[in-house]
Image 1 (cartoon, rainbow, N blue to C red):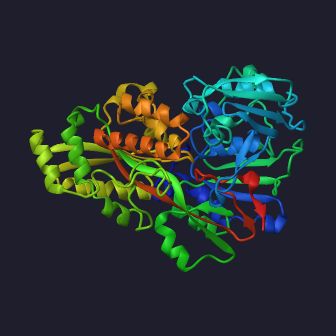
Image 2: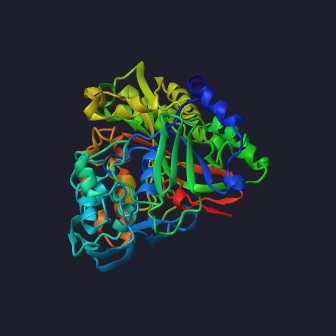
Image 3: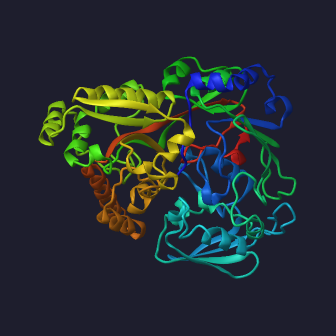
Length: 518
């Protein structure tokens, strides 16, 4: 999972107007001119580059450039194909054992020597069972057995084929240097103690720009560009204007731009339109005093106007989500239990609960889509007699709302508009609502033993039809709790120069190491 970060245009122009003006005015230094530089846009600054603590987009993209994984994913438009990467040998010996041998050309910078099987063992086992948000990726890992300097065996506790998709090519799967990380104290944040990848982190200008340069010691397939520049522009519309001013070569776009851009695609540009794995939902905190009665929570579910949100916030470009399992997959639920709005039912439930003049706070990020969605929710719940106070919240404060390490505030938040970058296997999307995620990312206080038991069964079940039954029952439990309203899967829209070929991973993040020149 990756988390998206954004702010409104007014805030951008107030706080970062100089950056945007500079972007719009600077000369074009794309590879077409000098053959070397790939310029991309990021929606927020980096925070934690240690794979154990990755949070946002750049936190994943940079290690993808400066570290290696045993295998890697291809473009989401091409079926998310898995190919060996750091491993020259990668083989399932049996349903619980994977054999790997690393390429012998892999070396760490800063004098830390070759990348070893011991590094793989350290990288995986330090996250397994830890307090990392990505510990779930290693839940079925028993141990990594080191055979020799470059070879090892990954032992699983049970057969678990999704390990190939949810662990090895993703956040926790980035291999770190044991000696360097231990020397740094066991973890790190924004300074990588040892790198081994096609690129090195060269320069970080906070909230403005990140520069990566080709690693001179990299002996694998050379990247197409010797430099990657990531410009941090939080607002989608500002990013589009910067793109049109020739300030970078690739950017995601807001859904509201779709019709305008499709009607008049900028010169020498191409569009990407794809179904996203990013799922959006409304969290209703069952622990908050005003929301402890399930009838009140259900009243909110009945008052919610899904059609209005899809049209008003998403311009009709997507459909109502039936859960958190990716839409139209073989595992997706057929329909929501409360699929049709019923204001009178909502009012009746509130009356039955003895509740009147209900007033609730709704927290959301400050980007335009989140704001539009929140305003429509405010209006639709208002028709049932529920007053919603929208609380626009900037990145850092937003992600601290449900974090138990930040104090007891997480117990009392009432409603939060949330969205996560989903994965390929349904367990990647369902993991965040387990009991152990309360105070981490389960902000609804959804606490279901049946859900946890089903999650564990879904991890190891080999029959797809049975897995679908498991996952759909889990989503039924979520909806029945009254702690969730499933909104949609965000459509993915991006624009890029026609002289490059981008590679976009399943979470919507680009992989600069796989970009090529057209």
